[in-house]
Each structure stands twice: as structure tokens, then as C-alpha cells.
Length: 247
Image 1 (cartoon, rainbow, N blue to C red):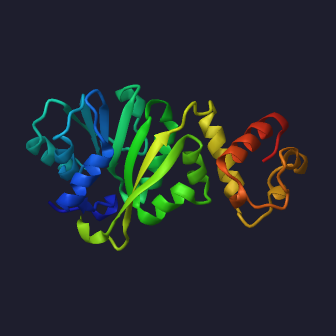
Image 2: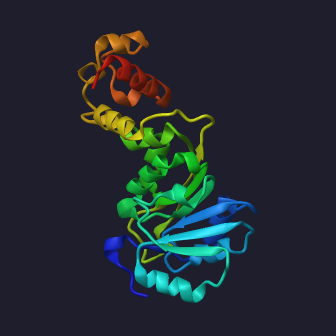
Image 3: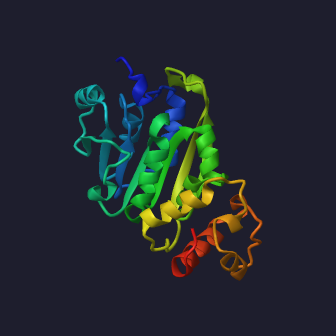
């Protein structure tokens, strides 16, 4: 099958790696699973060896869907022609597990959409570009902080390009997102806007972005930069900013 470069398609073909990823996803008998970008179904077929309740495949390429419909004959599987960057995950259930090899060109948008639906996604296992995986886990960016406000991020493994077809020029990284206990109740669009503003022009001191008295009230030096802040302090600043005004 001819792959479409504009969709960022790189198919994982190494059987041993596929089997290991399926183990790390840990499908359980009562779970509703959602695979993003199943492609030709290499990981899908490995997951089908496990017990679970339902498996929803989200694929944006019609030709891939036609291939999946021919090859996969399992009553637990439902195939959707859908864009994972905007899909309503919660329409599939209130407690779903997401996994998949996310296309490099839209991986950040998909991760963002997962956060927007965190109330129904307690866990996700995603393969992304290694650099993106590392930044999500411990980097200084609005997206990393957006994810880590609601999920703990565990880096599981690296996957070299030679295990894909066609081989990408970069390595991939597999991460597991686990929703934190009692995630904060926030206006997510507003919180995202706050983070985007906070992380713009990183070299500027925080006093150029937030009121100095607000920063001092929580023991933050106004001359600090945003990369020195952990998720707890940023969430505290957001809540105070909403009551006092800031960005």
C-alpha cells in the first residue's frame, strides 16, 4: 500500500517491538480501547490477542480503512473515519484507554485533544517523536505543562527508525500518560491560553508576564523565568491570576 507523506505515515513493522508495546498497553477484559492511526493494523492485530471489551480504531485515511475492513474480522472492533486531533473521545465511553503511533505532524494536537478529554481518559500510551516524548515528560513548554497538569508522564522506551516503514529520520519514544488523582476542575480553553501566554518569550522574567505582588505572594522571585516553575506552582499562579488579574 502506498503511504501518504502528508499524513506523516510511518508503519511500525518490527514484530518484537509491536508485541512489547502491546504488553505495555496492558489491555484488560472490561476496557474500552481506542487506537489512533492503526494504519495497516500491525499493532491492532497484536492487541486482538488480548481480552478487552471494545476496540475503536480512528483512521483518517480511507484507503487504510478499506484495508482494515478486509483484514480484521473481530466483533469487538469498530472502525471510524475520524481525525484524532478533534475527535470527541468521550463519545465512546466514560473510561477509555487510548494508544497509538501518532503521526509526527499532528502528535502535539492529538496530545492536546487527549487533555481536553481527560475526564474520560485515565490512561494513554502514545508513540511520538523521541524529542517530543522527552519534552512532554520534563520539558519547558505550554503543552508539556498542559499535559502534566492532568497526567503523570512515564517514558517507556525508544524505538529506532529502522523498525518503521518507511524509516523516519528520527527516533520515536513511547510514553504512558496516567491521569492524576483528583485532577483540577478548570476551564481548559482558558487555562491553555494562560499557559501559551506564560510560555511565550521564555527569556523574559515572570514580572513581565504576571503582577509582581502576585508572584511574591506565593514566594516566587519576579526575576525568575517560566522554566523554573513546576506544575503545582503554575496551577497556583493560574488560580490566583483568575482572581486578581495578570496576563
